[in-house]
Structures are given as structure tokens and as C-alpha cells.
Length: 616
Image 1: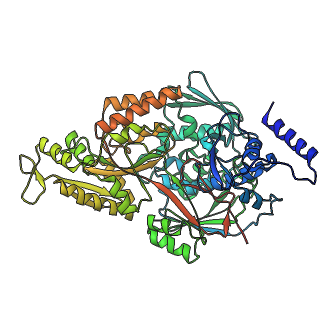
Image 2: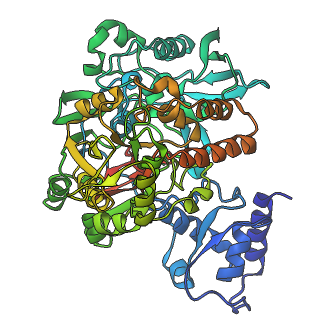
Image 3: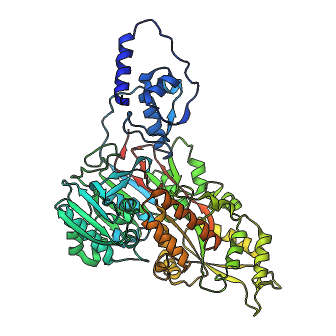
């Protein structure tokens, strides 16, 4: 018997026996509690057990979804009759349940301009030329993806309404929506998809910095076969199980072929997608304003409504200083402030005048990448000494007041395939760091900085970007490393120059962090093909790393695939190819005058504001 039928029978039974006399009921809980769904659970059963009334299950749905809006570790319940084992839900207290009285939803207020402060200007408004993860907040307004990451990290339909994967994993057949048009009136169809993927493969999009992420994300893509107007088969030279996740990436957003051909190299200044908003005005380095797309009617199913967005416009303001971003929120000049400092996040998270949502970032944590092909960091003992000399626990407490968490390897703990074995491989041990440097031939000089047999100082250039809190972190590390005899020079450059210097391998140390939801994207930072051309800033050219990365990208058995990435993480740390610092917890503060803001299921650095609207 289905859970839906059981729920219906329970309702009928309850209605049949309701009499004025009070019926005996099981004791109800005093306080609300988290609950992890097990086999044979259904919501009316849980409501009966914990609330004394099987008909109270809508309260569990309400409070769980309310929690999910601020913490994506909770499930988002789309259908009360479909809950899965392992979901984290919230069972309200009797008092909370009594306070919840579902009514017909009031009409949502439409109109108005949302002002949103972010830290950085997009490197480009062309997704196929982008390298930066922070641009997703702008892309999600202008563009759509073929697939989406939705509740509980499941893959949801986007511009592709369904898909099939061949037995050998080399062909992905996509069944496309037939009701979508671009902002310029161009119809979305199979030829559009072919144009987009051929463009990514050819790398013809103009890039502001670095190597475009889209080219790496399409993996061993060969060609697109147009089967009919709304069906395509994408062919790969090897199996590529990470492709469904890649299709949900903002780097693979679908652009208008008509606009690309019309504007050529100037397309980033005239972006045209299928998203819920269209370009109105873009002032480089200052702001981006988008206006509602009146024809939009193809939002992913996990959004709360269909049809055009509620807001008239969104203005993105690009404000580098975190203190300024918070200041304009507090004065009411903006409605959303993303990436608050740890101090401001902790100060305002419980303030009733603001809403706060956050989550741990999956992907590559905040790490240092020592140059593995340049003296002296080509010596594994020097790289290991850097790790042993790094006090991560103190770093996150002093610089981020505990808001961030220590990192231990190339993947954060929020990433699928994370291997906890890396957590015990190194500890803070300055004496061991000193011993390794002595073994490598670096002796303490007269001023405490070590020198080699030729008198060269152990001087390392650490290339930093403009972000203030990371600069503070590097200054903290500078003092730690000096204690073991390593002299660190910190050089701060703007993002474009910073990327160029690290891609070219100029400094001995380059910091990097990168958000992604599939461990296959480690290829971007560690495969030898990306040394000197992409984001392999450690200039790592290790055949075993390449082999494991390729095996991971080709393996179709998910458990075996994760085991490969588990082995890779341990090997990377054995070779000291990176110095782990911290995992990022991304946060956003916003005014309670706004409702419907949703944190991205793919990466908490991003928000969905399609459902956002002003409240009275």
C-alpha cells in the first residue's frame, strides 16, 4: 500500500471517529527536535508518534522547509508522501505545531527593485569565457542551465526536461523543453545546444583572465548530434559520469547563438540568455542591473512558483570592502549583503532586524599551492615543513573567530567523496618542520631565517589577491613560518594580475579556493595539462595524479569512483602538493523586507532570487 493511500485512509478514519469527547492520545514531545528518516517512516506516522495526531503532518513539512531555507542540511519536502531514508527533518514541539495554522497563501507582492551587494565584479558576463565562481549570482538571473542541482543534491530538469545515459557512459541524450525563448526572441532548440557545446570545445569565448572553466567541465566531449528539433545526443570519447553535475554548473549556462553572432567579441557586454531577468545596464566594476523577463515560464520545479519573477529589477552593486557591504545594508541602501566578514556574520546572525543564511562550501578549500617545479619548493621536505608549521586551528579562531573551519586536504568535508583519512595525516608541529628543513640542508642564519649551503635565504613569495581577510590570514602565517626560519614575502595584486602571475608560475606560493559539487573538478587544479595554462598553480606534473584523475572521470560505478578520489586526496597530501588552511562557510545577510530568497543547492555562495519579493 502506498504512503499516499495510507495518509488518505488515516484522514478518513480520523473524520469518522471525531466526537466532542476527547480521545486518548499518545504523549506529545515537549520541545522540537531534529529527526533522520529511517525505513518505513512516513509523515503521518511521525506526526502521530510525536504530536499525537497523524493529521498534523503538514506542520512537519512547514517547519522542515522553514529550517531548510536557512540550513540546507535539512531536507526540502516537495511532496509529503515522498520522503527518503537519511533525510534530516524537523519535528516541531506541540506548542510550535499548535502555532502553525495553514491557510490559503496570501497574494505575493510583485514589483520593486532589489539591491544586492556582492564583493566582486564578474570577470565576464559570458559563461563560456568565465573562470570565477562568484559570477553565478549574476548568471542565475540572466541564464538557465540544462540541469539543476536541487533539494537533497538531486539532479533536476532545467532546459532539458529529461535525459538518458548510454550503457558505456559515452553518450548523453537530452530531451529539451519546447516552450523556451531567449531574451532576443531566438527559440531554444537542439541546434542551440549544439552551438553552445561546440563553442565551449573550441574555446572561442573571450576570456578576461585565465583559462575558461567550461572547456574543462565538458571533459572528453566530441560532438553533438541533433536527433530532432528538441532532442540531442552529446557524444564523448570516453565515459564521463561527472557530466550531469557539470550540466548544472553556471559555467555551462546556455547563451543565444543569435546574440553571439551579432556581437562577436562584445557579447559579454550584451549578454542574452533565457533566464528570469534580462540585461538593462552594466557599468564595469560598479553595478549590473537586470529587469524582469515577462515571458519567463520555465523555472526548475523546486522553485515556489512558475511564470515571471516577482521583482521588477535587481541591481547588483560590486563593493570590495566587507565593512562597506554591511554598512550599506545597515543603512537600508541595499537589501542583500553577501560574503559578510566573520565578525559581522556572528554579530548580526541572530539580530531580528536581519535574516542570515549560510552553508559550507563544497570543492577545494582555501589552500596554498607551493610551486613544485621551482627551487626551493620543489623539495617535498620544504613543502611538508610548510604544512607542519601551519596552525590551522589558531588561524580560523584568530582571523575568522571560529566562523570558518580548518581544512585538511584538497576537498572540503562538504564535498561528495571527501576522505576523512586526510584529517590525521598532519598536525601542527613546528619542531618537525624545523627538523625537515635541517634535513633538506637549510640551516638557521644570523637573523633566524634559514640559508642553504650557498647562502641563499629561504625566501618565498606568496602571491595574494585583494580580499582583506585572506591577507590577514597570510600575515598570521608569515609570523608562524618565520618562527621555523622561513621568510615569506606577501605581494598583493588585483585579480587579473594575480591570476596571470600564478598561471605563469612566477611566485613560490599561490593561494586558491574553488567551489564545485563533484570531485572530478579537481582536474582543473591538479592535472598536468593545466600547468602553465590553467589553474594548476602548483605546476604539478605527476603521472600518478593524472592517472587517478582520469580514472575518476571515467569510472561509472559511483562507489569505485569515490574510492579513486579518496586515494587521490591521500596521495596529494603525501606529496604535500598543497597546504590546507580553512574550509569556507559562505553567508548572506538580508533585510526581512524581502522574502523568497533561496540558498543555492549547488554552492551556498550563490542565491536564487527568482522567488524573491517584497513584503509589507
